[in-house]
Length: 257
Image (cartoon, rainbow, N blue to C red; front, side, top):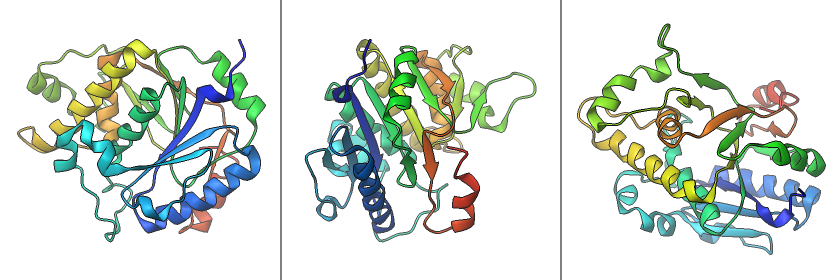
């Protein structure tokens, strides 16, 4: 079955000027390769600084958060403050992914602002054609749960399950790093997937004990509850271009991380 351009949406977040600048370079590169063939969605708390086009929709983060008021309370981003990668509230990307689901896109492709699509449309569509329903493809680092030895990513597994009174399907209890991910989730399961992500995110701020709101840890619970499979994406679809660290950029180009 042929994959239509109109079934694919690229999504990202750009909530500070440095990321807006990166996004603009990325989008220009994307447009040079793909023209207006694919829609791009960007979530930002500075929407006036990104100009929409025929194939680029700009969404205010605050407007996206209206569907989940607790997000506006706990997940705030100061555009004038510089966040390290590990301090940035990455769970907010669920809002722009949710928007793409709501608008009917079949394949939602998340990329960070420094992750660039190679432009090989034929290769991308061949990958999407073979992607199983209810799966996430990523070329990033992946972790899978083992009872022994237990990776530190899963160290709060039993405690969170007890606190929230939830049961995880351990066959799907896995997670991944975040520069790229292709979501192909059945329409009937998308709502459940996002609701679990909402719940796990906010519990990270409100649960008794040490708060856990890292998106990597949360995603493991979301996948386990929703029974969404995480699968490897072949290298070469995306490359990383780090504006602040040219050596790191050169290290990852060609690895398609």
